[in-house]
Length: 123
Image (cartoon, rainbow, N blue to C red):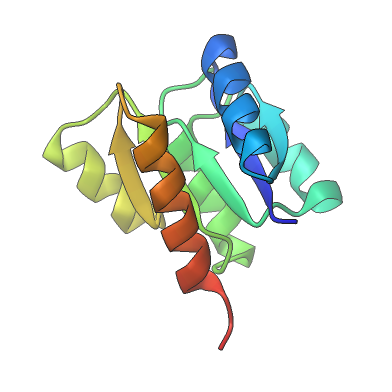
């Protein structure tokens, strides 16, 4: 079973995504900011992060930078209300594997998760 970490400061979004991912057969962890996710990553080792950019204590871009220093393989999908071209480019250049603007379709997010996980599997 693949494990997905949701890192977003919106409690309702974390709850809704967690429910949808659980229904799809994923195991899920939720965090309200990058600092919490960084602390929890060694014990749970997610297969993929869904990461908001604008969060208190540690934003998504900083979390991505820190994660990429010692983990270049775990996929990251940015999910953010910052949806200008510059924001998307910055997220991808920082180390994200995909970027989806809010609001978004859960069905599309699930398809992107499956796609990113498929590409991240070793041959």
